[in-house]
Length: 271
Image 1: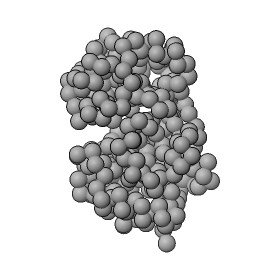
Image 2: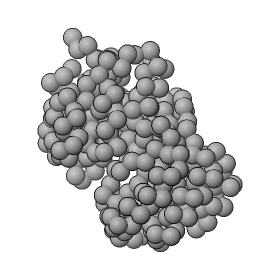
Image 3: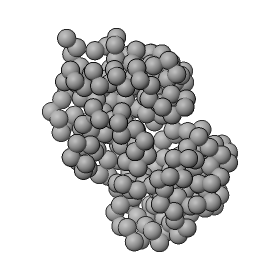
Image 4: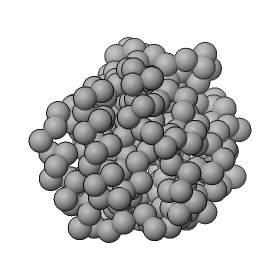
């Protein structure tokens, strides 16, 4: 019998293959694991709206560490357990930074995904073309981000800035470094801004406290830089075969890549 009681699994590049799908083998393995009494949790930078296409595969999951730890969500009760919002003055500065670099600005709330129409229709320019159909379907269109923030106080949990190139991203990273934020890199030219000290790892800690599970009894699987902290915090950190070398080196275990059911292979070996 496994000593582990909880599995936290990233989505993009991990649970999802290159076509942004969860394969039947991986879905079946997750269901079997949940049926055995293990908590199966998604640990992702996505918000609720961005999970809608995976509702069927997510049925075994009680909880989610969403928005890079900014929200702990109870899927069965359809309500947040914990929310960490970004301060309004900070959001307004991030909007200015995005506008200055002609970046795509993306605001996340509990249930909404907010972006400009022109940016949604031109996501390939920001290296995000693979997500365009999803954004086109789920996003609330907004041309006045500052007006939206003023009208929805305390609701923005994370701000994404998608840049046109690495130089633009790096300029904004330097600007954002002076703010009280957690900043992560999930896509090539993307910066994700959350409140200070809020990461997937802090979300795992909060969820374990809520469930009364020791961190030593958890496994986390991921592939990207925004998974670094949770892989180091969990009892066992698993890197995907498609992860960069830095992530592989800090992990305790490396599984197959996301196009070869790496999540299922890890579950079958560890649980």
